[in-house]
Length: 189
Image 1 (cartoon, rainbow, N blue to C red):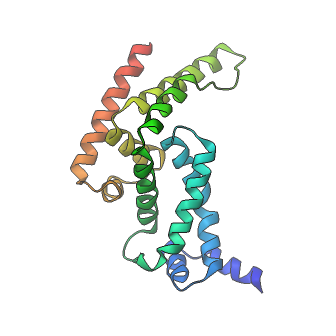
Image 2: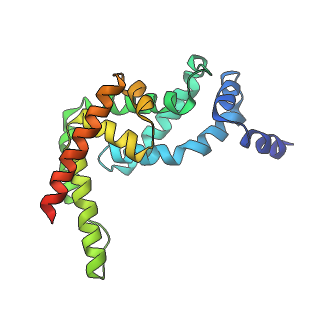
Image 3: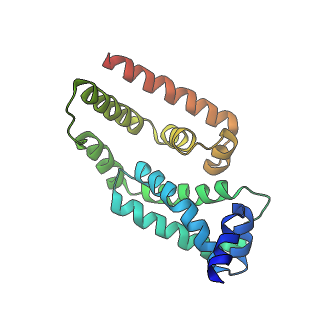
C-alpha cells in the first residue's frame, strides 16, 4: 500500500505535493526532498565555497524550513521559486560572516582538480578553474544572479523574485557578469 501511495505521489507536480505537505503528509515531503535535494546540494556547494559538509548541512536546514514553513507556501507561486528563495536567503545569512567569504576565495584558488593525462584534459581543467575563479571574483549580486540563472537554470523573472530586485536589474547584473567573465577568459588565450 505504501509503495502505491509513493508511486501516485511521484507523478504529482511540485505545487500539488507542497499543498499535501502543508496538510502534514510526510510521504509528499519525502518525494519533494528526493526530487530536489541533489540539485540544491549542488547549488549550495557552488554558493558556499565548495564546502561539501556545509552544503549538505544547508540542504538539511532548507528542507527543515520547508516543513516548518509549509503553511506559508501559496500554490500561485512556483514551488521552485519559493524553494530557491529560501535557499538563497540561507546563503545570504551565511555570507554575512566575512570569514566565509574570505575562505571561499582562498579555497577556489587552491582547489585542485583530479590529475589529467592529456594536454586537452589539462587545458579543460585549467579553463574550468579559470571560469570558477572568474565567477567567484564577481561582486556578490552579480555572482548570485549568474549562479541562479546559468547553473540553476532559473528564468530572469524567477531570479528577480528570489533576490528581490526588478527583472531589469537582474538582466543588467547578468550582462555585466558575462562581460567581466569574458574579459577574464580572453586574457587566458
